[in-house]
Length: 197
Image 1 (cartoon, rainbow, N blue to C red):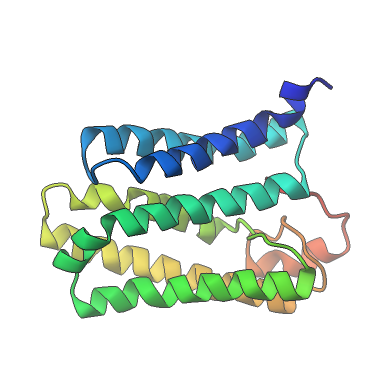
Image 2: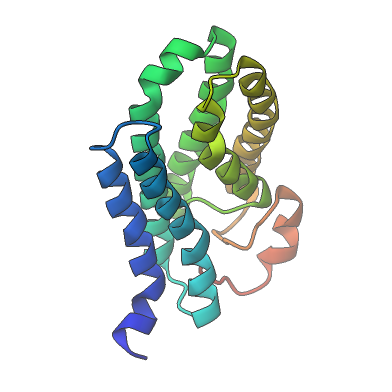
């Protein structure tokens, strides 16, 4: 297998890392910001798909994907923080903060229990990723009703996702990225583990 085929998914993930670094220099919610932001989103959508299609899933790819997600969303949060601070109400901060803390706890549990820096991409976590990615678009036009609806839907999914990932890490006997829901853990425990991207 040639270098590019073997590393295609990781190279796509690297686009997100470099895109996140580029976002640092761009004006939040500007056209260039959204262009780079869009490229980062496409990278997130396609790296795992490419890894699975080419059969090149790996522990390194999974860790790189998790690292790039943390960097990308960390930069996004830092860049948009002044806007958040101006527009969000105290209860909305709690809606954001609680699930965020739960996801960081899940990373810690996974690192301690399975000796991995990774996150399992459950169905709820994938839905949350899409909602978090869409977050800046809800600030265009600064419409309070839109944020409220977003916060209720997003906050509910985020809370469920954070609780579910922690439960999976606590209940599962071994790390298995195929655990797409807390309801499927037992089914996967006896099958060989495959790496996720």
